[in-house]
Length: 292
Image (cartoon, rainbow, N blue to C red):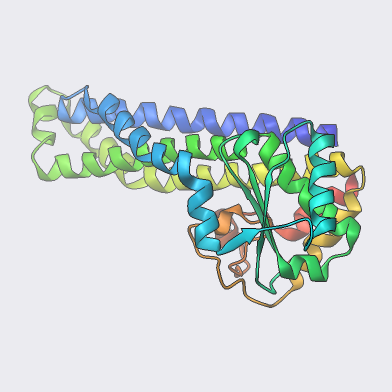
Protein backbone atom coordinates (compact mmCIF):
# COMPACT_ATOMS: atom_id res chain seq x y z
CA UNK A 1 0.00 0.00 0.00
CA UNK A 2 2.73 2.43 0.95
CA UNK A 3 4.54 1.79 -2.36
CA UNK A 4 1.37 2.64 -4.33
CA UNK A 5 0.82 5.82 -2.30
CA UNK A 6 4.44 6.96 -2.73
CA UNK A 7 4.38 6.24 -6.48
CA UNK A 8 1.17 8.18 -7.07
CA UNK A 9 2.29 11.16 -4.98
CA UNK A 10 5.55 11.39 -6.96
CA UNK A 11 3.82 11.15 -10.33
CA UNK A 12 1.24 13.78 -9.38
CA UNK A 13 4.02 16.20 -8.47
CA UNK A 14 5.82 15.54 -11.76
CA UNK A 15 2.62 16.27 -13.70
CA UNK A 16 2.11 19.57 -11.84
CA UNK A 17 5.72 20.57 -12.64
CA UNK A 18 5.01 19.85 -16.32
CA UNK A 19 1.92 22.02 -16.09
CA UNK A 20 3.91 24.94 -14.69
CA UNK A 21 6.60 24.44 -17.37
CA UNK A 22 3.97 24.64 -20.13
CA UNK A 23 2.54 27.79 -18.59
CA UNK A 24 5.98 29.40 -18.38
CA UNK A 25 6.77 28.44 -21.98
CA UNK A 26 3.46 29.84 -23.21
CA UNK A 27 4.10 33.09 -21.34
CA UNK A 28 7.57 33.42 -22.87
CA UNK A 29 6.30 32.79 -26.42
CA UNK A 30 3.45 35.21 -25.91
CA UNK A 31 5.84 37.95 -24.78
CA UNK A 32 8.15 37.23 -27.72
CA UNK A 33 5.36 37.34 -30.29
CA UNK A 34 3.39 40.33 -28.98
CA UNK A 35 6.06 42.37 -27.24
CA UNK A 36 3.86 42.60 -24.13
CA UNK A 37 5.53 40.64 -21.26
CA UNK A 38 2.97 41.90 -18.75
CA UNK A 39 0.30 39.69 -20.35
CA UNK A 40 1.38 36.58 -18.39
CA UNK A 41 0.75 37.93 -14.86
CA UNK A 42 -2.54 39.43 -16.05
CA UNK A 43 -3.64 36.04 -17.38
CA UNK A 44 -2.67 34.33 -14.12
CA UNK A 45 -4.58 36.89 -12.02
CA UNK A 46 -7.66 36.56 -14.23
CA UNK A 47 -7.64 32.75 -14.01
CA UNK A 48 -7.17 32.79 -10.24
CA UNK A 49 -10.03 35.25 -9.68
CA UNK A 50 -12.35 33.18 -11.84
CA UNK A 51 -11.51 30.07 -9.78
CA UNK A 52 -11.97 31.65 -6.34
CA UNK A 53 -15.75 31.57 -6.53
CA UNK A 54 -15.88 27.88 -7.43
CA UNK A 55 -13.21 27.12 -4.79
CA UNK A 56 -15.21 28.58 -1.90
CA UNK A 57 -18.67 27.61 -3.07
CA UNK A 58 -18.04 24.37 -4.98
CA UNK A 59 -19.54 22.17 -2.25
CA UNK A 60 -22.83 24.10 -2.15
CA UNK A 61 -23.01 24.22 -5.95
CA UNK A 62 -22.37 20.49 -6.40
CA UNK A 63 -24.79 19.49 -3.62
CA UNK A 64 -27.50 21.60 -5.24
CA UNK A 65 -26.76 20.20 -8.71
CA UNK A 66 -26.88 16.66 -7.33
CA UNK A 67 -30.16 17.26 -5.47
CA UNK A 68 -28.63 15.72 -2.37
CA UNK A 69 -30.16 15.93 1.09
CA UNK A 70 -28.57 15.61 4.55
CA UNK A 71 -28.35 12.08 5.92
CA UNK A 72 -29.82 11.74 9.39
CA UNK A 73 -28.75 9.19 11.99
CA UNK A 74 -32.37 8.12 12.38
CA UNK A 75 -32.68 7.18 8.71
CA UNK A 76 -29.11 6.10 7.89
CA UNK A 77 -27.52 5.04 11.16
CA UNK A 78 -25.08 2.59 9.54
CA UNK A 79 -23.87 5.16 7.01
CA UNK A 80 -23.35 7.84 9.66
CA UNK A 81 -21.55 5.41 11.97
CA UNK A 82 -19.27 4.24 9.13
CA UNK A 83 -18.33 7.79 8.15
CA UNK A 84 -17.66 8.74 11.78
CA UNK A 85 -15.47 5.69 12.35
CA UNK A 86 -13.41 6.16 9.21
CA UNK A 87 -13.01 9.89 9.88
CA UNK A 88 -11.60 8.98 13.28
CA UNK A 89 -9.23 6.46 11.68
CA UNK A 90 -8.14 9.09 9.12
CA UNK A 91 -7.62 11.71 11.82
CA UNK A 92 -9.89 14.34 10.26
CA UNK A 93 -13.18 16.02 11.27
CA UNK A 94 -16.33 14.12 10.36
CA UNK A 95 -17.48 15.35 6.92
CA UNK A 96 -21.06 16.41 6.38
CA UNK A 97 -23.00 13.44 5.01
CA UNK A 98 -25.52 13.70 2.19
CA UNK A 99 -27.69 11.18 0.38
CA UNK A 100 -28.71 11.34 -3.30
CA UNK A 101 -32.03 9.66 -4.06
CA UNK A 102 -30.91 7.71 -7.10
CA UNK A 103 -30.84 3.96 -7.69
CA UNK A 104 -27.49 4.09 -9.53
CA UNK A 105 -24.65 3.22 -7.10
CA UNK A 106 -22.03 5.97 -6.79
CA UNK A 107 -20.46 8.46 -4.37
CA UNK A 108 -18.33 11.60 -4.30
CA UNK A 109 -16.53 13.95 -1.92
CA UNK A 110 -16.20 17.72 -2.17
CA UNK A 111 -15.11 20.68 -0.07
CA UNK A 112 -11.97 22.81 0.02
CA UNK A 113 -10.47 21.19 3.14
CA UNK A 114 -11.31 18.57 5.81
CA UNK A 115 -13.17 21.16 7.92
CA UNK A 116 -15.53 21.96 5.04
CA UNK A 117 -15.82 18.50 3.50
CA UNK A 118 -18.92 16.73 2.20
CA UNK A 119 -19.40 13.08 1.34
CA UNK A 120 -22.45 12.19 -0.76
CA UNK A 121 -23.73 8.65 -1.28
CA UNK A 122 -26.51 7.50 -3.57
CA UNK A 123 -29.32 5.39 -2.17
CA UNK A 124 -28.46 2.84 -4.86
CA UNK A 125 -24.99 2.44 -3.35
CA UNK A 126 -26.50 1.82 0.10
CA UNK A 127 -28.87 -0.78 -1.32
CA UNK A 128 -26.47 -2.67 -3.58
CA UNK A 129 -23.23 -2.88 -1.58
CA UNK A 130 -22.56 -4.93 1.51
CA UNK A 131 -20.98 -3.51 4.67
CA UNK A 132 -17.30 -3.94 3.77
CA UNK A 133 -17.86 -2.66 0.21
CA UNK A 134 -19.62 0.45 1.51
CA UNK A 135 -16.78 1.08 3.96
CA UNK A 136 -14.29 0.72 1.10
CA UNK A 137 -16.10 3.42 -0.90
CA UNK A 138 -16.36 5.75 2.11
CA UNK A 139 -12.65 5.23 2.85
CA UNK A 140 -11.79 6.16 -0.75
CA UNK A 141 -13.77 9.40 -0.45
CA UNK A 142 -12.24 10.05 2.98
CA UNK A 143 -8.80 9.80 1.38
CA UNK A 144 -9.78 12.51 -1.12
CA UNK A 145 -10.79 14.73 1.79
CA UNK A 146 -7.64 14.05 3.82
CA UNK A 147 -5.38 14.68 0.80
CA UNK A 148 -6.97 18.06 -0.03
CA UNK A 149 -7.73 16.75 -3.51
CA UNK A 150 -10.36 19.41 -4.17
CA UNK A 151 -7.80 22.10 -3.42
CA UNK A 152 -5.23 20.39 -5.67
CA UNK A 153 -7.66 20.04 -8.55
CA UNK A 154 -8.66 23.70 -8.13
CA UNK A 155 -4.98 24.62 -8.52
CA UNK A 156 -4.74 22.42 -11.60
CA UNK A 157 -7.90 24.00 -13.01
CA UNK A 158 -6.35 27.45 -12.52
CA UNK A 159 -3.21 26.36 -14.37
CA UNK A 160 -5.22 24.76 -17.18
CA UNK A 161 -7.45 27.82 -17.46
CA UNK A 162 -4.43 30.11 -17.67
CA UNK A 163 -2.87 28.00 -20.44
CA UNK A 164 -6.13 28.09 -22.42
CA UNK A 165 -6.44 31.83 -21.84
CA UNK A 166 -2.89 32.50 -23.03
CA UNK A 167 -3.44 30.28 -26.05
CA UNK A 168 -6.60 32.18 -26.98
CA UNK A 169 -4.89 35.54 -26.56
CA UNK A 170 -1.94 34.37 -28.61
CA UNK A 171 -4.19 33.26 -31.45
CA UNK A 172 -5.99 36.60 -31.35
CA UNK A 173 -2.64 38.42 -31.45
CA UNK A 174 -1.94 36.84 -34.84
CA UNK A 175 -5.22 38.25 -36.15
CA UNK A 176 -4.50 41.63 -34.57
CA UNK A 177 -1.10 41.85 -36.21
CA UNK A 178 0.92 41.04 -33.09
CA UNK A 179 3.22 38.87 -35.17
CA UNK A 180 4.48 41.94 -36.98
CA UNK A 181 6.17 43.08 -33.79
CA UNK A 182 8.20 39.88 -33.74
CA UNK A 183 9.24 40.30 -37.38
CA UNK A 184 10.17 43.92 -36.75
CA UNK A 185 12.32 42.78 -33.82
CA UNK A 186 14.19 40.41 -36.10
CA UNK A 187 12.72 37.26 -34.63
CA UNK A 188 11.74 35.89 -38.02
CA UNK A 189 9.14 33.33 -38.91
CA UNK A 190 10.57 30.49 -36.80
CA UNK A 191 9.42 31.92 -33.47
CA UNK A 192 6.06 32.77 -35.00
CA UNK A 193 5.65 29.22 -36.26
CA UNK A 194 6.59 27.77 -32.86
CA UNK A 195 4.17 30.14 -31.14
CA UNK A 196 1.36 29.17 -33.53
CA UNK A 197 1.95 25.44 -32.95
CA UNK A 198 2.11 26.01 -29.17
CA UNK A 199 -1.12 28.02 -29.23
CA UNK A 200 -2.90 25.13 -30.98
CA UNK A 201 -1.42 22.22 -29.00
CA UNK A 202 -0.98 23.70 -25.50
CA UNK A 203 -4.69 23.62 -24.54
CA UNK A 204 -4.89 19.96 -25.61
CA UNK A 205 -1.76 19.05 -23.66
CA UNK A 206 -3.00 21.03 -20.64
CA UNK A 207 -6.28 19.13 -20.69
CA UNK A 208 -4.46 15.79 -20.95
CA UNK A 209 -2.25 16.67 -17.98
CA UNK A 210 -5.26 17.82 -15.97
CA UNK A 211 -7.02 14.53 -16.64
CA UNK A 212 -3.85 12.55 -15.90
CA UNK A 213 -3.56 14.22 -12.49
CA UNK A 214 -7.23 13.40 -11.84
CA UNK A 215 -6.58 9.74 -12.67
CA UNK A 216 -3.49 9.69 -10.43
CA UNK A 217 -5.51 11.07 -7.53
CA UNK A 218 -8.01 8.25 -8.01
CA UNK A 219 -5.24 5.66 -7.77
CA UNK A 220 -3.90 7.39 -4.67
CA UNK A 221 -7.34 7.54 -3.02
CA UNK A 222 -7.81 3.82 -3.77
CA UNK A 223 -4.51 2.99 -2.05
CA UNK A 224 -5.12 5.24 0.94
CA UNK A 225 -8.71 4.05 1.26
CA UNK A 226 -7.49 0.46 1.36
CA UNK A 227 -4.99 1.45 4.03
CA UNK A 228 -7.75 2.97 6.16
CA UNK A 229 -9.91 -0.18 6.09
CA UNK A 230 -6.96 -2.61 5.92
CA UNK A 231 -9.09 -4.58 3.45
CA UNK A 232 -8.41 -3.76 -0.24
CA UNK A 233 -10.86 -6.43 -1.43
CA UNK A 234 -13.81 -4.45 -0.05
CA UNK A 235 -13.10 -1.47 -2.33
CA UNK A 236 -12.13 -3.71 -5.27
CA UNK A 237 -15.44 -5.55 -5.07
CA UNK A 238 -17.35 -2.27 -4.71
CA UNK A 239 -15.70 -0.82 -7.83
CA UNK A 240 -16.64 -3.90 -9.84
CA UNK A 241 -20.26 -3.70 -8.71
CA UNK A 242 -20.55 0.03 -9.43
CA UNK A 243 -18.95 -0.31 -12.86
CA UNK A 244 -21.15 -3.28 -13.78
CA UNK A 245 -24.37 -1.50 -12.83
CA UNK A 246 -26.24 -0.34 -15.92
CA UNK A 247 -28.58 2.19 -14.31
CA UNK A 248 -27.75 5.79 -15.31
CA UNK A 249 -27.08 8.36 -12.61
CA UNK A 250 -29.71 10.96 -13.47
CA UNK A 251 -28.13 13.88 -11.62
CA UNK A 252 -24.64 13.46 -13.12
CA UNK A 253 -23.26 15.66 -15.90
CA UNK A 254 -19.91 16.49 -17.46
CA UNK A 255 -19.24 19.20 -14.88
CA UNK A 256 -19.54 16.82 -11.92
CA UNK A 257 -18.63 13.42 -13.42
CA UNK A 258 -14.96 13.68 -12.39
CA UNK A 259 -15.94 13.87 -8.71
CA UNK A 260 -17.59 10.46 -8.48
CA UNK A 261 -15.70 7.33 -7.44
CA UNK A 262 -16.63 5.76 -10.80
CA UNK A 263 -17.40 7.85 -13.88
CA UNK A 264 -21.22 7.96 -14.03
CA UNK A 265 -21.09 8.81 -17.74
CA UNK A 266 -20.37 5.45 -19.31
CA UNK A 267 -17.18 5.50 -21.38
CA UNK A 268 -16.52 3.82 -24.69
CA UNK A 269 -13.37 1.77 -24.52
CA UNK A 270 -10.18 2.53 -26.37
CA UNK A 271 -6.73 3.97 -25.83
CA UNK A 272 -7.58 7.43 -27.18
CA UNK A 273 -10.70 7.64 -25.04
CA UNK A 274 -8.74 6.63 -21.93
CA UNK A 275 -6.45 9.64 -22.41
CA UNK A 276 -9.46 11.95 -22.13
CA UNK A 277 -11.06 10.10 -19.21
CA UNK A 278 -11.24 11.56 -15.71
CA UNK A 279 -10.96 8.09 -14.15
CA UNK A 280 -8.50 5.21 -14.61
CA UNK A 281 -9.88 1.96 -16.07
CA UNK A 282 -11.77 -0.01 -13.43
CA UNK A 283 -9.85 -3.16 -14.34
CA UNK A 284 -6.55 -1.43 -13.56
CA UNK A 285 -7.82 -0.03 -10.26
CA UNK A 286 -9.11 -3.43 -9.18
CA UNK A 287 -5.88 -5.13 -10.22
CA UNK A 288 -3.78 -2.73 -8.16
CA UNK A 289 -6.02 -3.15 -5.13
CA UNK A 290 -5.80 -6.93 -5.29
CA UNK A 291 -2.02 -6.78 -5.57
CA UNK A 292 -1.76 -4.99 -2.22
